[in-house]
Image (cartoon, rainbow, N blue to C red):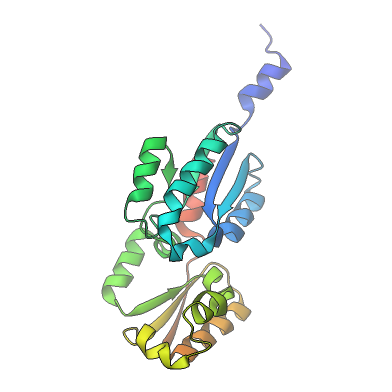
Length: 207
């Protein structure tokens, strides 16, 4: 029996997939979607600034999941634990949805084992990603009041010895900005290219 075109199309169609993500990952996720031709994937983001109030994340993710089920075949949550203390995992267990592995995006980008080894070797490092470098003044300097009270720097950063930039892109302008941020805080500067790391491998596994 010859298969009808409509049935063949339905069989070959990749499942419509919703990615519920932190806004801090939006640029990288959109780049991966475009680069890999994953036109069956759609991205929706929650505010990156919620990392300062992580208690908002779990129930907002739940709401996105339940809304997304009406329109998508699969849903992935592009958050690590991100300071929710396991509450996000309990929500995802209830909803039957998988998230990125690990505690935070630094480990996602560098890889869980590599980041754990780095953090154990030097617990005095302060980490940046491309997103944090781009928005360093707003998310660090202004949010902590350092722009108005630079004397606060030792209180916030006195226990750090270095700033480690875990870069997603090889961008000289971002590298210069990260170096300047380290100098402003009186920290040694370390650059390490991480790429998209487990963010990319996680999506490729489910693509």
